Amino acid sequence: MEEKCGTTNAKALREDRKPSVVWLRQRLRRWYQSHRRMFRWRTEPRDPYVVLVAEVMLQQTQVWRVEPALERFLERFPTLEHLARAARRDVLVAWQGLGYNRRAVHLHESARAIVARFGGVIPADLVQLRTLPGIGDYTARAIAAFAYGKDVAVVDVNIQRVLSRVFFPLQSQAEQMPIETVRRIAEQLLPRGGGRWWNEALMDLGSLVCTKRSPRCTECPLRRRCQSAGMLQPAEQQAKEEPCYRNVPRRLWRGRLVELLRQRSSCTLAEIAELLFGSAAADDVAWLRNLADQMASDGVVCRDGERLELPP
Image (cartoon, rainbow, N blue to C red; front, side, top):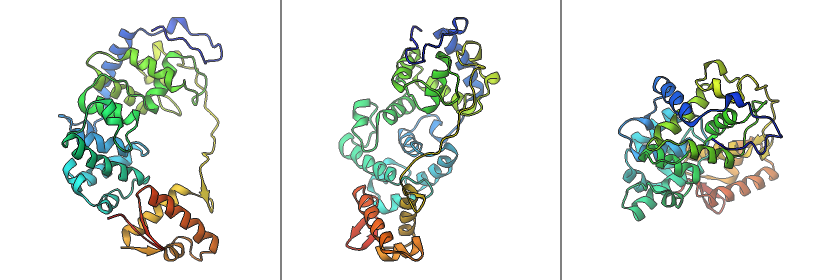
């Protein structure tokens, strides 16, 4: 592995710890065989539809929340065809508890596009996958690798963290290398015919051992060749900045609005404002009207004048 540090502020590589590709693969494969996590979307034989739904859910939601939600969703829509034929409202109702409801809209649109354009078969080709609504480069690679076993590098936050620490002498738990740098390394490491197990092993290592905070270096199978082992210091906690109204993140207001519409057939903006804000001022109604317009543009709600409902 000849990847150079480049952006590590002239930190010296620990030459005695430089890992070889063969050593990494052997150590990680052995660890993975004993510690791999088992999920519905990893059940053999792999079902591309289950992988698609899981990967969309996992885009912005923790695994422990996705597992039960995925089971409920698959009970309601057991196949891609069931999902494609469903009403948008039913899909949004089934998405309850996951948040970021626009993902449900994209998943529904993708199911319909797959039926219309690919004969109901989820494509394995990255270019074709990226043409589907809400499917970016990462999700396309995840579907290709995990559903079809394609030899493509899948770099999520866990893999980015693991490979950054293994190949570069980092000093802070928050520090990591740019995604482009990590992807180049990931592509070089990928074993032929091992796209599925290799990516899953790196993800599991990052989730279980090489965690964002308090990494357990003494338990890591790669510690002897890790450039950052024993050097990582806790990072200062920084508050996440995001759009808010009344000190509540906008994404939570979006979720609350959809939840109200799940419980009622339809509501006026004034009724929703009273339910959300209690005693709603004119500014509250104006802000809510703007939020409803954004959500209608996203396909999450339908607006008819002052009345809102879930899409048909």
